[in-house]
Length: 134
Length: 69
Image (cartoon, rainbow over all chains, first blue to last red; front, side, top):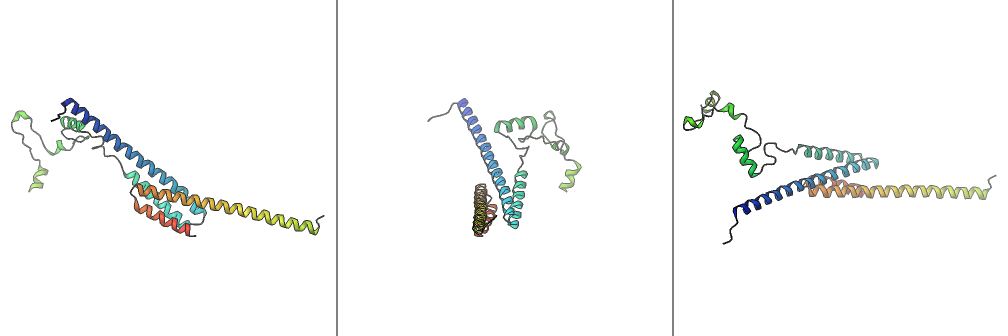
């Protein structure tokens, strides 16, 4: 049976990942362009409708522009997950203790983690945790 | 001095000029309304492509209303 060399497998996986990321990014750009074009056309149409005396319709179109533009604005990238790849996730896990980009800054306040020299890892609950458990 | 004949010609000329202006104006209106419907149609298509069917439906209704008048 045909078996891929480990280095070749890694190379293929990396290339596939790159292609997938590029495809996702291109797709997002196309969608953005389409939305911008639609909003521009609607803006011109609203002006024309007003000139022709279709004020009610012009108002509807203007509202539509505002709603669509707001939707576009609200689609923000999550800094915790943006640009995550399997390598980045492993690296994050090694360095930060979580697969996400941001540090889990609250974790240090929640629990006191013992060092490995102390034996079995035990999570010491704080007063806050005990209140939650009772 | 303006004679009767000249006066008649002058009236005809004025009427034809008025008609030409009106025709030109109506041509412009027709072109503008065609462009409006074209723009609305395209934006409706784009919203449909983006999966925003509600927006596409609203625009289509406006097109029907504008085109109907």
